[in-house]
Image (cartoon, rainbow, N blue to C red; front, side, top):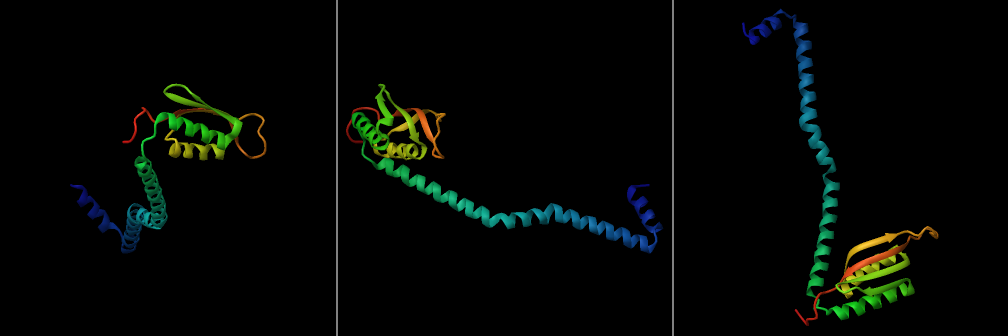
Length: 170
C-alpha cells in the first residue's frame, strides 16, 4: 500500500468533527507559513521602503557633491610644487599660528603640530587640499593628557604630498 492510500483510510476513519478540526488546523498552519514566508517579509520591506529611499537619496546627494568637488579640483590649473609649499605654509600659519610647523622633506612635507583644535585641523586639511593641492598620506595624532574642557586638542604630525614636478599648465 502506498502512503496516499494509508492517509485516505485514516481520513475516512475520522469523524466529521475530527475532519473539520484537522482541516482547520491544517488551514491555520498553511496560513501561518504563508504569512511567515511571503507576507511578513514583503510588509516589512514595504514599511522600511520610505526610510531606505530617503537614506539612498541622501547618499546620492553626498556622492554628487563629492563628484562636483572632484571635478572642480581637476579643473584647477596645475600648481608648481614650490607654490604649493608656500601656500601650505601660509595656511598653517593662518590657521594654527605657532602651533604648527611645516617642514619640506623632499618628496613630502611634514606638518608638526601641538594643541591643535580638531575642527580647525579638519577645516585646514580640506583647505590644504583645495588651495595647495596637498593630500595627507600619513597622520600620527595623539590627544594630550592635559585636555581642557570639551574641545578636542591634538598633537602629532601629518605627512603631506604636494603636486609633483615643476611644470607649468596641464
